[in-house]
Length: 267
Image 1: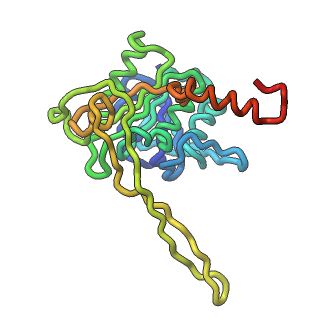
Image 2 (image 1 turned 90 degrees about the horizontal axis):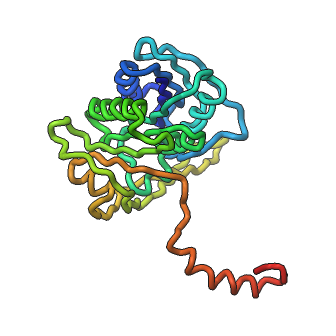
Image 3 (image 1 turned 90 degrees about the vertical axis):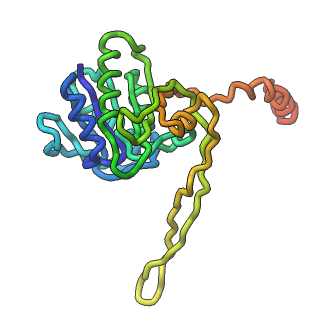
């Protein structure tokens, strides 16, 4: 089995290497990750400038490692199309510092990298621990190892994208595991303005977007609820963002638009 590991916290992030240490005991592991912090870039792909890639010495001995001057999604694409000759059996993204719950999945670089692997037809896991301090990576690493073994044994579908979030606590304090839906989570963003000197007597303004505290609805069965109740959340994802419940309700407006636009060929 061959596993590609990436993240959005950057090549030196401890969660990345905790994962590599655990997974190398069951598979051949390759790390291809951004050379710097890339949180919040979602599925962004760099199209209008060249990217540098350099092999580096691994923190975990025996793991082939590359640092990419790009996004997590860039890292996956470059790994699959250029760096790795053998087929990858699984892509694991993480271990992210901080949760990726609800609408977080739309901007998360961790989940974005997993989606990129999914677009290539590969099973993928995005995994996060819900804290930024004194993180317990050991449980998250172990879950990924077990899931990889279940995948190899045929107990999981090959077309797979899982978003996993763990409470930051030892295994004996975790209340259980839940298969969940995405919950509702939103942020009150703030924008701070500052300035720097420019030229001899001028200045240049800059702006800094700051996430506020998340506002969440804790509905049972969601990832938000699971984390709040000290449970591990496993959410299967896919790429269909269609609002299916609105399809029928928009038919009337579509008919009106067909009548109101000048072309008789519409409708």
